[in-house]
Length: 243
Image 1 (spheres, one colour):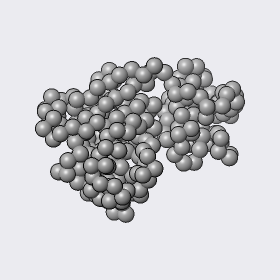
Image 2 (cartoon, one colour):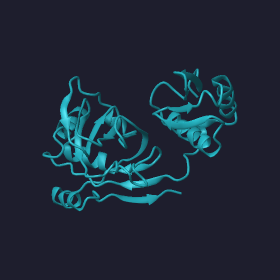
Image 3 (cartoon, one colour):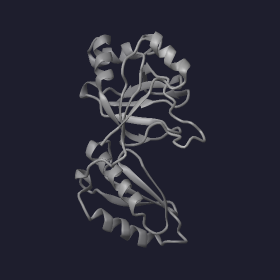
Image 4 (tube, one colour):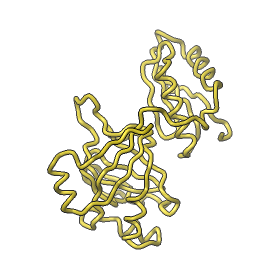
């Protein structure tokens, strides 16, 4: 358990942030996910929404229905019921395989990333595509996942300048993490692969493809296979329930 954590901070007039650390850490991320799941099973009076970031759970409440002091007490009592850092991940998670093309025209910065890591491009593809990573948070754009942690080999920094734009479905890498882009956007992360995964479907019963806690593998496919999956509209995504 990190010194000074967990702790509860106020966020504006209607928010509380339950923090389990001040940097990305596997146990702190698991604690945030487990705490959110517990809140969703037994929601305190006045709580309207709960979401997670990398190592925190945000609780939005109705200040007319519950005083922030009373809710802080309730959350503190829940925090004291167990060691959240040792809690298992929540039920209902999935393992998703997402076909990814790593050829140069689709992954323009893979060579640069491999050079920074001190490996060949083939070794880079093998390492990234064989990694099974967890969705640690959804953010920045609807349904956009942050995933990790990769092997320490991939603890490379963000770029010092922005890439003007990567396309939707771009797989980018920095600091032992992967991010999969929902929309075309600028980024300081390096573009190492391309998918056709539909991350966000407005109006669908399940609008987000991925949820925090899901596990993902970005399996390598050829450009020809990728283009066929892209044309089919589902990106070749396969989902399997985790027990």
